Figure 1 (cartoon, rainbow, N blue to C red):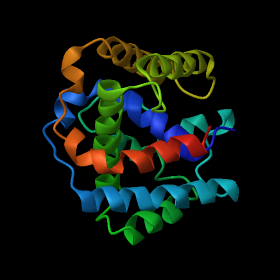
Figure 2: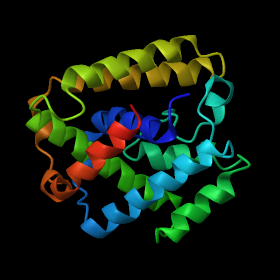
Figure 3: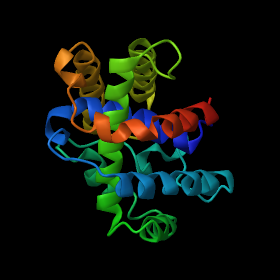
Figure 4: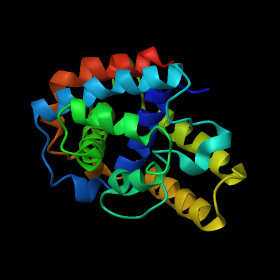
Length: 201
């Protein structure tokens, strides 16, 4: 099973590519980034204890980070998929302890962090950073294949996901994508974000 942290990262990259123009107007700050990063190890621990949000084929229809809606705040919108899950309360406790007002604020922060992170990587890729554009495309292609054979989501949801990933892949060739005001804010955290990726390989 793919570790939760890795799945979060890849999912955020795909979603941030789909909505970069809307998210670019919202600035991050160091405090929010620290708060968000503090939640990721806790979510990974939940998975390791088999009480976390499961992300295998048997529970895709209730996955927190499934990308089933089209809006400028896709992660926030998709939190509704978790509300009926037995571990939703544990998730909200982690979010509250990190001093987020609510799960929506947590999700919005995550969107902006990974949007800036992926833009940074594409702008500064030197062969040593974890993900190149081609690697991101590879992950997207893999997700696309998994979605096409997924038996646990409706045809409508499946088509939304397929369209979203295809649009994201197209945006990888858009030079405007790397013009993200949050890149300078995220830069001091790049080393830590790279480690999060490395730990899940």
